[in-house]
Picture 1 (tube, rainbow, N blue to C red):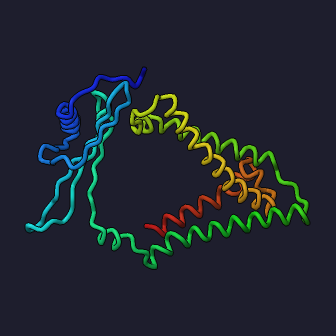
Picture 2: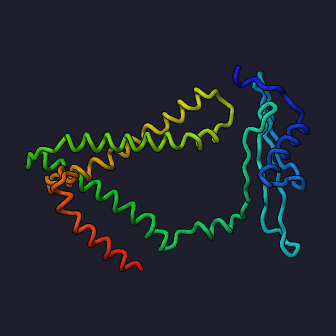
Picture 3: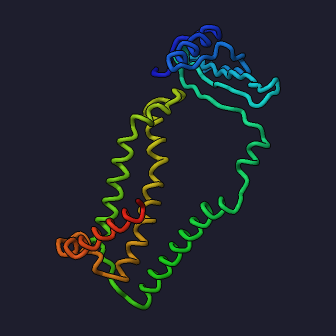
Length: 234
């Protein structure tokens, strides 16, 4: 069984945590244990520990500093650092002022409206205009999106492996992780296909945007626009 590991005492688990964190220049020798939890998996015992200490300024408490870690059998499973922020600080930081609404919800509203407009335009075309969409362009676009998504996922494998907590087998972990990302591919393809289809109906020449003729036509204008943008920035 890949989950079977030798069991250690709580004191040994604390020493394992301290030793591993010391290699990351994290000292928890002066942090008392605030919470402990033991989970028996029959083949091994997992110990979850949380260390917390109150930080003070001018003899007044300001914030709690903490470290949580878990030992799976006789190996460090994971660890994390946190600051237990006061509620009034969080309310002050997360309050929705006018700039937050403009930078967050306004962009989202414009995006949703543009997608709805695109859907309406496509449905209206299928009823009245009867213009044919270049499925070759859509196929190339979807293939490119899927390839880029898969390539990005493969490049992220080294990071995704560090999120493994050891509470399941590696096969289950990877299947769950891949399954969680599958809806993102469909969503991304949806977001890309609708604007592209609308742009094609407005200007069918877009299907030849990567042809030699289009490159010659737009390269000089793009170069001049780039120079103008750099000049405006600097």
